[in-house]
Image 1: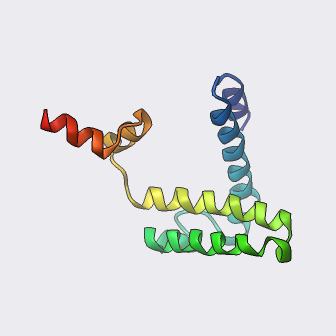
Image 2: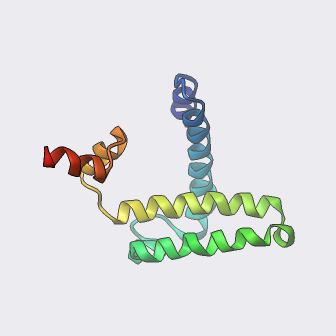
Image 3: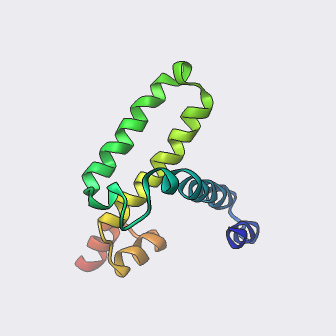
Length: 119
């Protein structure tokens, strides 16, 4: 975790710094709540979930956002962390190739790839 904090300090983009701090919070949530409560891969329940089930969990927590006044701010913030975790699980279950990961990292879109292949 200290490495991620140091990495955040060395990145110039404010949005990137904010995301790294958020990612650290998600990692803390996984380590301190999710794993003790539900176990860890490959022995936890979500190991057998599909990407669609992970997306359904995201939708569930998004719907709960509307209950902010009933549930309280802290629980809504915690749900945002859970959404990020389920997004990561769905992403991994899609088994992206190294090429796809590189294209995403570079900011390339399908539209740009299609245009380049036509030329």
